[in-house]
Length: 288
Image 1 (tube, rainbow, N blue to C red):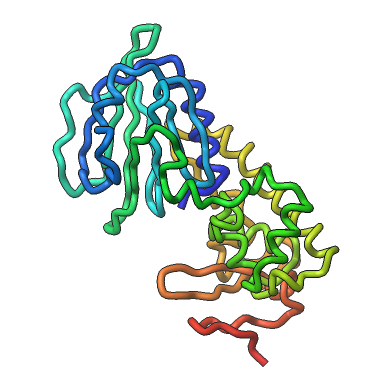
Image 2: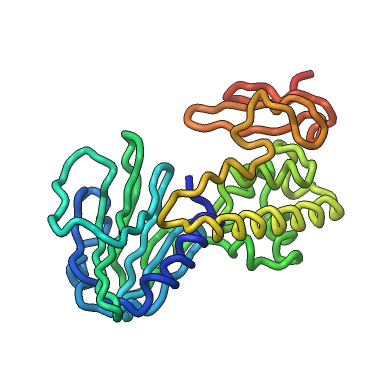
């Protein structure tokens, strides 16, 4: 799933390539992605693109006060093309969900595609006058790269959730998902099962610094990948996430995994849990 660094890179790409252009034809290849119908998506046509923004893991394009907002979900991406097909796409079961054409001041006619891999289609698109009209945006907590350390500490003190769950709770903190929470906790050397409100002050400080460094480094790495032309491989910068069975790059111990119904997370027992192995079952608890 694209998280804060990847979505920020896509927003920056749109600021560089779409802002200043005029929206042309909008092709809907999968009607199910549209979550709003008033105003209609055709109202975007002919509008100047005046900005692009990120709200947590939501990507938004400002078209002169009318916003196209999308959540890429688990398998979605935005792909830019300088020479799109002039023929409207045929609705079907393929990855293409939506195509937006542009006219640039230089006379070019690029477009971007919103695509989604996999069989579970969860990519969503809204057309709204204010991004806050999107429920998922309205309920977001402070952004993970904007929150201050005192604010971060105060947020953690409000929940008894495991720290892994707290970091990915978008209503508590916006932008961090499964992958980067694994990396943040590994960098901070904190167990995913630690209780948020009982974290000692010194560990909260370490965790905050780890979050800032991991996300900032990932943003810079993503920005350098020309995000909307070639989907970056975020796993190339990961130390534990999606590296089950491989050696931890810090201590050499085997990276372990805890699996749930539809997802899993990875950690290093030596670095994070004092050598204790977390039970790999749905009702996970520390093995005695």
